[in-house]
Image 1: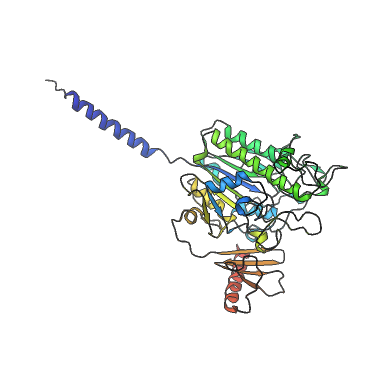
Image 2: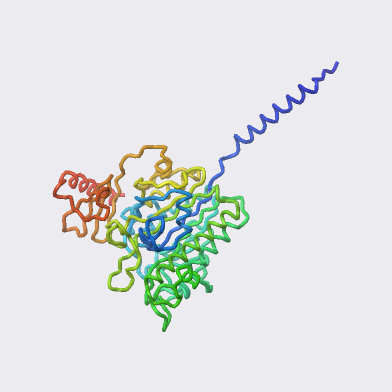
Length: 454
């Protein structure tokens, strides 16, 4: 004899079974990994943006980004010079640990640079299913085996050296623009070229998440050795950037020309962010933007037009103007919009943050000097005061809590500053607080010994 359930119970059983199947499928489906857009400016000053207090500079895109994410007040770069800041970003390790603590010369740019045994961010992300691209300034070595597509990037469009002419793409008398391993000749303003390449990569139809490293060369100062015969040594920007200020594009005022370069950079970043929106990827993309080091204060050369205010000095020094840089992070749904964070963070933190976000494991056999930034930025964890260390040329420095120890030459005593009360580093407190000087000096000595051993 056959037995049939009433229709109602049949429907109920089917619904329960369907719910069970859908729940099981959802449980098995891995969490959606975020896209990653990592953007760096080149020598942009702490005081060069509207959102950092500049009353004249027109940077509406970055100001808007800050209102949509977290603006960092105490973010440091691991080095005050281009090569080293980029090498430490990509490795998550102090310069002393990676054995690269100097700016590559014109010839060295085409040598090994960063040793090949170092593992870079894309090499952590590719095994996790990311497609990877770099568009812009490389500056950590370009010999065979050292180039971006040989170090974890699927695509590269950019230049090998420390800076190039914005329109002719020359560095030290040598044409320097590459696509992958091939030299290419492309017309256009370099800032726009790199932004356009990023837009195309974002727009590509792919099921894979992406990691884009977008290191612009703007607003790096002009150099006579990059210019063509008869070409003036001046800041370069498209006419439309000058027009936003009402300036004549032929102006010879270096301050006006510099502002146009920064505004052109801001506009280019805007196009990249708009492409995220157009592609429907905004909500699942973390955007990290910062300046590779502080603006250079090149006195008596007509180039001291950037601003690190209210910080002291600038690039290649370990005063705050050299290493404390503007930084903004946007991650919709994870970081509260319009937040200002005073957490003491450093560019070394970016690698472990991204690997963790991507679902990867940090290496057990390799020392990383940063930590995941997100707990500090979300307020999920109370962070102990960190100790950050710096050494470049004759300078040495330590930051712990509100105190900073800095020395400008090895044979001179350390100075002590309370950055909460004296952000411009004007008042040396070493004589008033010898105990703190001794504490931080011992920490620096111990760190110096430790990084030399590993």
